[in-house]
Length: 390
Image (cartoon, rainbow, N blue to C red; front, top):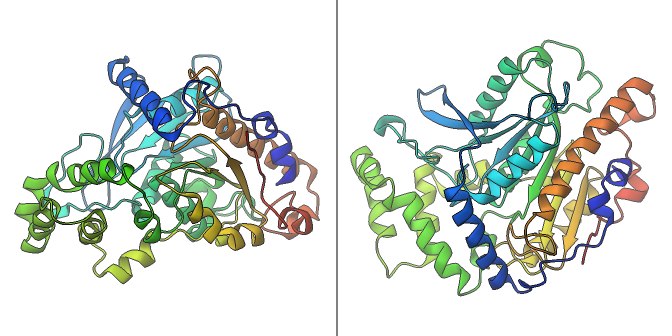
C-alpha cells in the first residue's frame, strides 16, 4: 500500500483550499455554481439501460477516453453517487471526465429510482446505500463489454458506503488474490482492483444523527423529495405500507431521522435490523487497496464518524486515510476553485494501484503472494493511515 501511495503526487502534496471559499458554507455555494454549470453543460455521457434480474431497469452512464488516449488494459471505473444525486450531478460528471482524461473508462451506476428512470410498481424498491446484487450485474455487464479488464469502485457519500461494503462482502473478487488470473470466475465477472470511499459517513445509523443545522434542513428537504415525493405515485400504488412511508415523509412534524428510519422500508429488506445488516459497510474486511478521503470540516459526514472507525482503519493494512482540514462534503476544489483536487487524488490512486499490481504479477515475488494484498508491510502501514492535510 505504501508503494501505491508513493506514486500519487496529490497525496504527498499540501492541499490548498479555494482562497475565496474557506468555510464549509462558502464551499457549498461554490458547489452550487458548479451544479448550475453541470446542468447547462453539453452531454458527456453515453447512456445504457441495464435490465436487472427482477426486470427492473437502471441507467449506466458511460464516459470513454478520447480517441487514442485510452489505456488499453486500464481498469474500468464504476462510480457510485450519493443519496440525493445521480450521474448528472457536478460531482459525478466532473469525476468521470477527470478519469476519462487520464485514459480510463468510467461509468456512473444510477441506483434504482435515480437517473430519471421510472420504476415499475411490481419491482419498485430504493435504498441509500445500494443493493449488492445490482452491482453484481453491473460488473457482469462490464465483463461483457470489456472482457478481462479489472474494475475500480469509486463511491461518494452514501455511494462510498456502497463501495466499501461491496469491496468487503465480495472479497473473493479481489484482483490481488493468488488465483486472480486463473479460474472460471475471472472469465465471467471482473476482479476488483481497488476502491475509493470519498466522504463516507461509515455508519449508516449514527452518521445521519450527527448532521448539524442548518445543513440537516437542506438534507431533509432533498431527502424527502428524492425518496417520497418524486416516486409518490409508485409507492402509493405498490402497497399500504409503502404508501404510509410517503405519508410520514410528507408530514412536516416528522424529523429527518424519523423520515430516514421510515425510508428503510422502501429497500425491500424487511425490518430495520435486516436493513442495517445489508447496508452497513465493513471497511475492516476490505481486501483490496482502499483510499478513504475525509475532511475535518465536513458538516454532512462529520469527523466524529471517522474517529469512531479509527481502530478498523489502523488494523487493516489495505486502507489509507487522506485527512484534509478543508473540503467539506464533495467540495475539495483547488486554490482557484476551478478543478477538484479530490478527483486528482482518486485518479492517481487508481492508476498507481493498477501499476503496482502489474509489477507485482510480473515479478512473481513469493513474499507478496503470501498476503491478500501485494506490497503491504503490516508493521508499518497498520500503525497509522495516510494524512494529507492543508
